[in-house]
Image 1 (cartoon, helix red, strand yellow):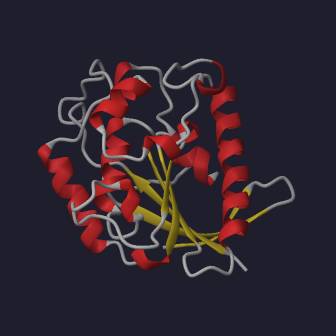
Image 2 (tube, one colour):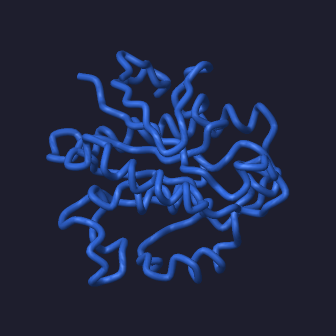
Image 3 (cartoon, one colour):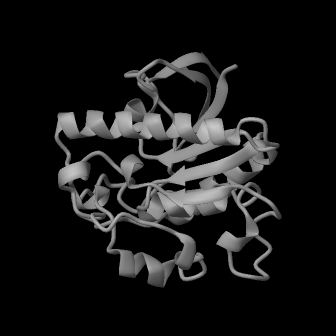
Length: 216
């Protein structure tokens, strides 16, 4: 039986309007915030999502928290904020789905900065690889490293889908970057608009590679 995977591209960041790649780890623009709110309103599968894997860059983390506040467990938001749902989805910061290049706009902030800015996240239970945000080793920008990252995330997705199988929330969302979508999906031609999603029904081959059965 295929699994349902939702691939989401982040909303507009401050680097997007003028293609300014020199901005380090851009945040969302006002338009990007509005796009994320529209994503929350329009996404039809909130009650089926059990896991959200988000790139730890500012714009992807903002998109995930705004766009999926009707999916994510309440503990990932400030108490009394009204965001999040009881018994909702787990939110995981996943460096393997961060942006593909080493340009400043595609490089993340130090973990200490993220902890300060996203102070209401339950950091005591959130695990973030200490190599992040350095674009070296596992997260280097060369084509071989990117292919290996894609293979790692596909293996992880297979594992997570098996863990969620049979639960009331079996779907997985990946909030990533336009340039990395093809490595997650294995589809060279995949395209998703800002703060939009592509829903795929997937299975996995014997090497844990994604097989797309159907897309919508």
